[in-house]
Amino acid sequence: MPGKTPNKTSGKTPYYITTAISYVNGPPHLGHAYEAISTDVMARFKHLDGYDVIFLTGTDEHGQKVEKSAIAAGKDPRAFCDEIAGLFRDMCTLLNISNDDFIRTTEPRHYAASQAIWLRLADAGDIYLGNYAGWYSVRDEAYFHEDELSDDPANPGGKLAPSGAPAEWVEEPSYFFKLSEYTQPLLDHYQAHPDFIMPATRKNEVVSFVSQGLRDLSLSRTTFKWGVPVPGDPGHIMYVWLDALTNYITALGFPEKGIEGREDVFETHWPADLHVIGKDIVRFHAVYWPAFLMSAGVALPKRVFGHGFLNIEGEKMSKSLGNVLSPAAMVEEFGLDPMRYFLLREVPYGQDGSFSREAIIQRINADLANDFGNLAQRVLSMINKNCGGIVPEPGALQPEDETLLGDATNLLAEMREAFEVQAFHTALEKMWTQVRAANAYIDHQAPWTLRKENPERMQTVLYVLGEAIRRLGILAGPFMPDSAAKMLDQLAVGEAARDFSSLGADARWQAGIELPKPEGVFPRHVEEEAAE
Ligand code: MSP
Image (cartoon, rainbow, N blue to C red; front, side):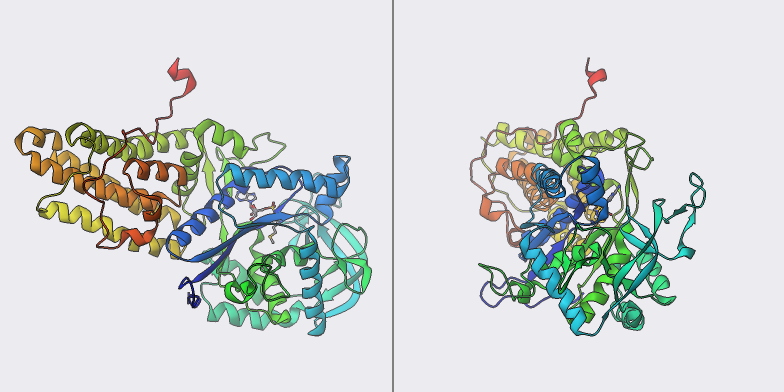
C-alpha cells in the first residue's frame, strides 16, 4: 500500500484511521469494544512508529432504527441520542482508546458535510427523483431485492433479510443514486488495488456481488423525519448510510480543506489509510462509499478491513439470549490491559471469535503472568538484590547474548510487517516468541548461579535480559498501554524514550541508572471460588 508523503515541517507521514460509527439504539457491547480496541492498537502502533495519526470514532444517530428505539424508550430522539452517545464516549475512556475526535452525526458540522456531498453527487448528474417500492430492513438500515430475502417462518407472508432481520415493504417517493453506473469502475478499482478490501474472503464476496451488476440505490426517505434534510427538498431526508459514511470526511472538514487549527488536514490526511469495520457492513464501505466518492470527485480510502464477529461462549450475542457482555463488566473482572491483550491474541484478526471465561483466564495466567510478567519480575528482582538496584554495566557479549539481542532488535520489523496487514495476533505471536526466548535464556544462563561463580557475567546476563524486556515493553505499548508504561517505569525508561525510535540497533538500555523497587505488572487471575 503506497504511503502518503511526509509533512515537510514535521517530517511525519500522515495516517488516518477510523472505526465504524455505532448506532445509538442501545448501549455499547463487547463487539463495539472489540472494534474500538483493535483500531486503537493499530493507531497507537502507527503513532509510536512516528506517524502523524488521526484516529476517528463516533456515533451514527439518524435513521429509522434509532428513531424507533427512541420512541420505544419514550424519549425525544435528540435527548435519546445524547444519552447513548455519552455511553459510547465513556466506553472509549474506559478502554483507553486514543481517538483524536469523536464524531456524532447529529452535529452541525456533519449536516454541512452531508449536504455538501449530496450536492456533489447531484452536480455529477448521479441523482434523480423516482419512487421506491421494495423491501427495507430497519435493523440493517438496508434495501433488499426480493431474491435476497427468505420467508419468515414466524410471520406468514413476512420476509427476512440475510442477517435474520425482518424486512418490510416500503413505497415512497425517493431520490435515487445511479449506482448501476459504477459497477465497472468499482470492479476496475478492486482489480487495480488488490488490498482495498481485506481480508481476502470479504473481498471475494464483494467482487462477486458487484460482478452481478449493481442496481440504482434509493438515497432518500420521506416516511419519517429523523435524518439530514435533502438540500432543496426538505420533505426528503437522506438515506442514513450516505449520511453515516460521510462522517469520515466531515471530521477532516469536508467540503473545506481542513478544520480550525488544522487548516489543511483534509489535504494532508485524506484519503483514509484504513477504515476498520465489522464484516456485516463491508458492502456499504466497499461498494456504496467508493461509488459516492467517485461521483463526488473525492479520492477513495486506501483500505477497508472487515473484522470478524465476537460471540460469547460460542453463541451469538443477543438481547433475547441475555448474554450481551458489557465492556465495563469485563474490565471490572479481568482488568483493561489483559482484556485488550486477550481480544487481539485469541482471535486471528478478520476471523470470527468467541469470548470465553476459561480462555481469557488461561491467557492472563499463562501468557501475561507466567511468561511475560515473571520474566520481568525475576530479572528486576535480581538486579534489585544483586546489583544494588542499578542497571548493570554489561561486559563482553557472548554469542547467545548477541542472538537474544539481535532477535529483540529484529522484532520491530516483524511486527511492522504484521501490522501492515492488520495481523495483530501474528504480531503478538512474534512478541511471545521473543518472551519465550528470553525465558529460555535466563534458565540456561542461570544468573542465580553466576552470582557466586562469576558476578561479572551475571551482570552481563541481567543487562541483556533487561534490554530485551525494554524492547518488549515498548512494543507492548499499543496493546497494553498502562501495563507497558508500568514496565518501562520499572526499567527507568523516560517518557521520551518510549516510542519506536528508541528501538534502533544502537539504542540501548542505559547502564548505571537507578531503578525503582520492582513490582509485578501482570497479576494472576484467581477465580473467586478457587480463592476461598
Ligand atoms: N452505524 C453502522 C455503521 C456506520 S459506519 C459509517 C453500524 N453500527 S453498529 O452499532 O451496528 O455496529 C458498529 C460496529 O460494531 C460495526 O463495525 C459492527 O460490525 C461492529 N459489531 C457489532 N457487533 C459486533 C460483534 N458481535 N462482534 C464484532 N463486531 C461487531 O453498523
